[in-house]
Image (cartoon, rainbow, N blue to C red; front, side, top):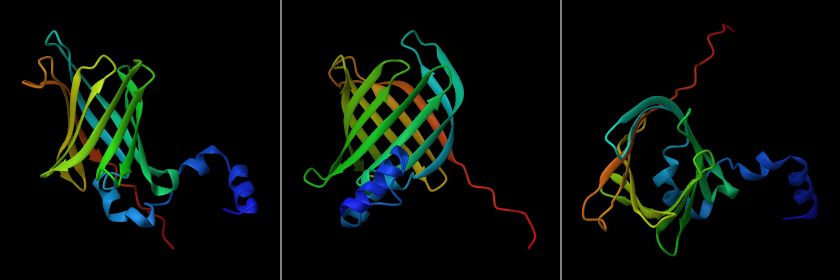
Length: 179
């Protein structure tokens, strides 16, 4: 990058340096695993507590291209419950995704590896305490998906649902003005 281009980029601010207009040309096809979610979503949520109680709510999700199109970042918000972001970086050497979730509201952090498995996207990893986590995108269509977050307390023999999100794409309204 030339000095002039770099100076111009610095002058345009953090958001401009972070955001990208699309996937990096050298990995466009691979980026579509999560790239299919780029845009804005609403979600209905069910959070399952360990004591069997459930919390339901309504939130939102926003996905965007970042870091010269070599990663995808998303923000998930369920008011009063969590507010966090995921950085999803495709690794050509692994043919998989590095997933890093951060929720500064609850101080909850997780690192996972994501891959397509059949019609689902499955992310395996652990929380900071080492508890195995499995987060899945299921029932994926262009307009909706079902996200399921699970943990295992017995070395992955059984899985317990912690959260489910039923997401629907927000379709931008078209202008209704007459020309």
